[in-house]
Amino acid sequence: SNFGALAIPPLHDTPRQQAMVLLKSFLLAAPLFARPALAKDAFVFLGATGDNALRENGVWQGVFEAFAGGEFDKVGGLDIHVAMNAPHSSSELTTQVNASLTPLHGVLTSNPGWKCRTQAGDCSVEEFISKITVNIWHGRDADAQAADMAPALKDYDRLTLYLSVPPSVFGAWSDAAIKNWGQGSKERVHVAAEKPFGTSIETADKLHRDILGPGLTDSNLHLVDHWLSFFI
Image 1 (tube, helix red, strand yellow):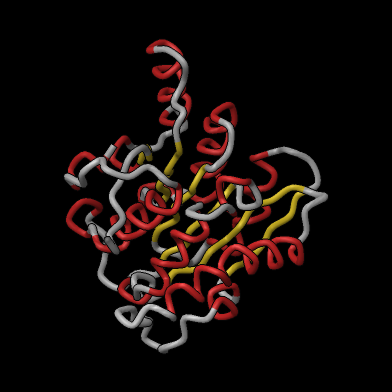
Image 2 (cartoon, rainbow, N blue to C red):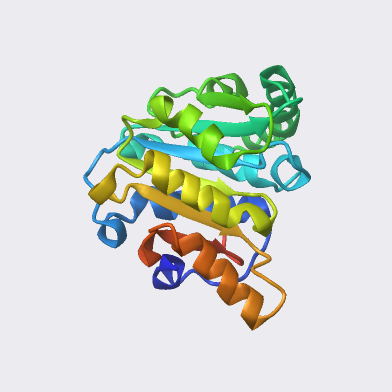
């Protein structure tokens, strides 16, 4: 994956730190991805209601800190698209994300050394949540749900599909993303996946083939393990 080129010391291993560094690397690493300046990005999040996403130091807290650190603005804006299955609901997600982020927001704003770095100067949880679009699908069909999401994603220069879900669905979602969002030679789809990556060399190799098989370029695959928070 491209993260090897970032030379980030493997000192911390929480989803929050992983997500923060992941987003910073995506948003600032133009030489790695040869992407146009000030492109508008979408962060497509699977597993957004899981414990790994919502808990303290989880993914949502890492994404929020990237937002509050001004990283979204550096690419002309980043929107968050969440793919969920029924019976989950948008109101449920809003309540859970708010409950996860409000204590963190309190800790940040009480720190005299912390500063909101968004262009608008608004680092409220409400402003962050306003950037979230939710797609709810009845059933578990990656291709059908990705097709349903395609109109909402068609105008972004780059899509980062973040898989905080079981590895058994990595391949199906990579295939669905390339098929429905790829726009051919633009290679605008990136896939980021959290460990575990198999239970042996053989299963890890198969997982790697499943993700790349649909046509994802190796440089657009990002495997998340240990990363140092860029706020530390």
